[in-house]
Image (cartoon, rainbow, N blue to C red):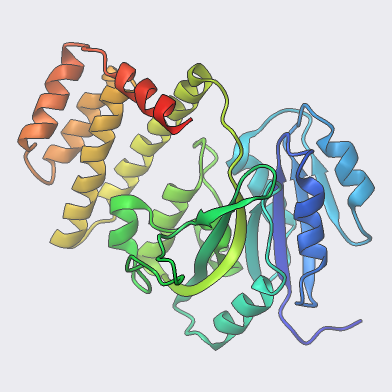
Length: 317
């Protein structure tokens, strides 16, 4: 059957998502949009994800099964290399797409200027068992947004705090082609990709729930600490890239806000060695303020701050 609608490539990344993969794939199969190719990448899962995927796959789906764990960025790029769509959706196999999300996103992108590289929206948050627990963006009891979500030229916003949940977005493949996909030297993708993408492309916010985001219980505190430390290393690499991209005083101030937060993370994670590099980059744009200077001094003295982080995690559990 020949389609007149643009092809959308949905790239599903799976790692130990066996319990949830059926819900995820079914949400793709039941989309109201007619022209979708599904590419599934299993990143050497240790559970029964691969066998479940094989049982669920339909004719025309493409399955990549990694023999070793390659991480999010490399795994996604393997799927991206197979993608033929005009638009790309990056979907984790523990999340779900609402039935009309792809149709809505395509309709908006087709009517948007070519400078619009992506559209993004809100997400419905659910527990592991599927119970709704809220939305990604804060809302009142009537469902009205309690915050102003940036839209259009959001580069400065991304520098400061990454206000976009990547899974809610649909992105032109041209953006991925221009940027050569995700940076495979990093352990996570969103901050880096958004910094590079929003420098030249607009991201349009639409107040619709375009993903159901499952909040899976985390591992123990030691594993979480190891993961967050690796993330901080990647964040440092991205901040160095961002420093070469900023142009205006407002953009420099936004990056400084990010660097101040990263200094706090160095203290809370006891990652003292990375504090001085963050501080040095900070000084290229602004002198350290009093709080940042005190945090840097604490890191140089190797005063433990991780107990505060563990206390925070305990409070959330």
